[in-house]
Image 1 (tube, one colour):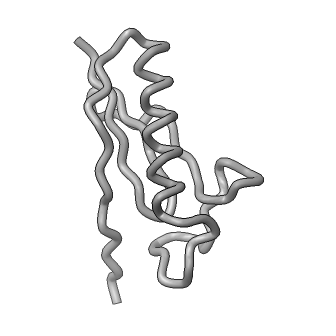
Image 2 (cartoon, helix red, strand yellow; image 1 turned 180 degrees about the vertical axis):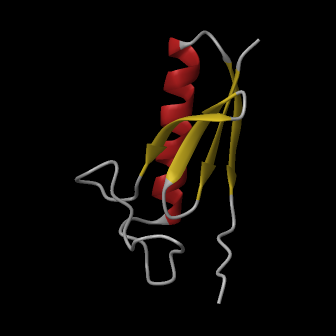
Length: 83
């Protein structure tokens, strides 16, 4: 059975069986834009982390329905800076 999960930080990704099938940003006007640019969200996010999490959950559940898959939740991934 297929399993759909999500990961979020400054933007978010939806994965099916561990493979990314969708990536979204944190800009409410343009879904693919992540502000500020990666690698990390050191300045404040364009939208709050709760909103990014909510978008991630909603998108992952929608993809799970489309693919007749199980939704297994989302998790926050910590961004690590290589200085």
